[in-house]
Length: 613
Image (cartoon, rainbow, N blue to C red; front, side):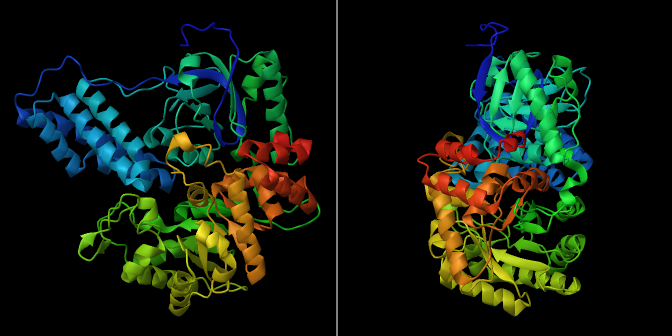
């Protein structure tokens, strides 16, 4: 049923994947489809002349993306846009377009066909390469728009960049490129609903970082909604209501107020439940709590839980430190390695790690060694004279510690830089100001190799990621060697459920509430207890306040997530005792589906928790 065909006042409830908590209400602004190829363009008769036009378009698109990169407010967005700018001028893409011009394709068809070939190739490669398909689609749209002299798809109210509407805007799109997601302004866009997308995509991550309530994978929303349609969304539950009635608006306004009160320790604002009231208090995301993040997290009966931040750059680490989190549970070091032709030097790495450690002033900082390889190829990481091996299934190929073992020089340099940063930090009273862990560890032999190497480099605290069933079921053996472990829920879900985490059609299998995943985590935690070593969770699933309670019930005492999510998790913990968490965990473990697991846990939770979700 198209938006034009359905009754303009018909109420409709859709469901997707909540990826950024918060409740929002407002008027829809559709991100319309980008311009397609020019069906009336002539075939190419002068490839060299047409290629001049194409290269001019490539330069213009790259220049625009670079300009936006320079204006970006954070390192993650800046690096993402800069990488897309390089992609727009990629030499291989240039050659592919010329090939199609030589075959007689018109300019826009040549661009579309060449990028299409890249998309097919990246899709087959899987892993991080497949994650860049959205980037390629965006580059294709921008190039075609530039060649046709048309604007790239934008909402009618230009809600992405300017709050020029009198009422809150909810942006609705089929998908959103990282370039457009990076431009989202919480003052203009109060919520985000996408027809496509998954929980681990760039758009979901950027929305969460900006505290914008968001739901992705909402099938049918582009047909159900029109510009100016009123809409209510819940970024925690994934519910989207098109044409909400008065009761929906009243409930949403109440949830906004109660959520704000919960996240601000009872400091509530007013909202009367009317259309005006919900517009005035139309959203409260995880960024709304201000200084509340600076208090210790503990259960109602006083069990201390560490809430740490997942970060991707030193700048993000500094931001998280100012928010008052307990430490960094995951510093992804790939920012130093990806999208460059030469490996980072020891000095360059030392400066980056030292900056993050200094920001936390003795609080623990856990750095994951480079998680690259077959699914995140490095131009400078060659094996036996060839580039990092391309395999049919990169998720099962040479990645993480496997690449480190084949290219010890890269890992040795990284460990030396980390040791330099550790020494420069003055250590800390506990001696654990900087810790290092290796990704994709599956055997005791790999664990011992890495831990010995880290200790020899001068790093006293070396751990591993638990991302595979192999690591989970032998956690006790691995932790007899390693100093600590951290569970990566995204990859552990992928390998436990045999489902590619980049395939949106399999998102239900990758739900972190899957009982099989929870049971795998319990096995890992029991192994840690047997070895007397700590196990934390550093997957973004830890940022779900309800699921965080289940993790605590499983025995986890340290959770790491996007720092803005710590406020809601802290609020959830205060409402429940450790015994409550254990009962919720057991109920989820006993469930027969992800949906039942969540419902069972929610049924045992304090009713006030619903205001936080």
